[in-house]
Image 1 (cartoon, rainbow, N blue to C red):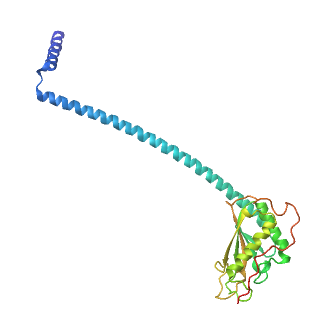
Image 2: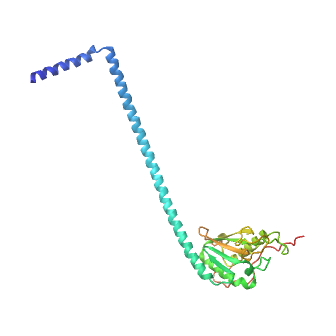
Length: 258
C-alpha cells in the first residue's frame, strides 16, 4: 500500500510538470486565466468593500459622538430649564406672598395685575398719589425677584371722546410707560423691562359693544423666567434709599382732538 501511494505521488508530480510545461490546451489556459481574473476582481472588490465598511464605521462613530455631545447639551439645557422653572416657581410664590392684600393688585401664575381705575384717573396716565406707596412695594418685590418682565397696557373698548388721546392704544402705551419709568426710579434696570400696548384688543372680560368693562382697564406685568437679570447700569436710586414720593413721569399730554 505504501508503494502504491508513492507511485501515485510520482504520477501526480509528473502530471503537474506536464501541465506547467506547456501540455495544457489553449482553451484550458484561457479558462484558468479568466478564473484567475475573476478571483482577482473578487479580491479587489472585497478590499474595496472592506474600505467602504471601515469608512462607514468611522462616519457612524463620528455621528455617534456628535449625537452624544448633542444629548449632553440637551441634558444641560434641560437641567438649566428645570432650574429656571424651579426658581421662577419660588420667585412667584415669594411675590404672591409679599403682595397679598395690596389694594388694586392681584397676582396669579406669573402675571401681576394693576387695576386701572385704582392706579389711574379716568383717561389719565399718571399714577395716583395715594397709590405710589403700593406701586413702590410692587417694584421692590420685582426688584428682589431678579427676573425680567413685560409691562402690558390694556384699556376697555369704549371709544376715546374727552381725554384727548388719539386712541385707546395711545392711552394703554402711556400707562405702561409710566409704570416702566416708575420702576426705573425704584432701581430696576431698564434691560429687565419692556412694554407692550394692547389697547382694547385683549380684554380680560368680554362685554357688549361700546360697554366699558372695568376689569379690562389694567396694566399687567408678566414675569419672564428666561429674561435678563442685569441692573441696566447704576440705578437712579441707591439700594435701601427711601422711596421717591414724586409722581412717575407719564407720556406727554395729548393734544385735544379738533
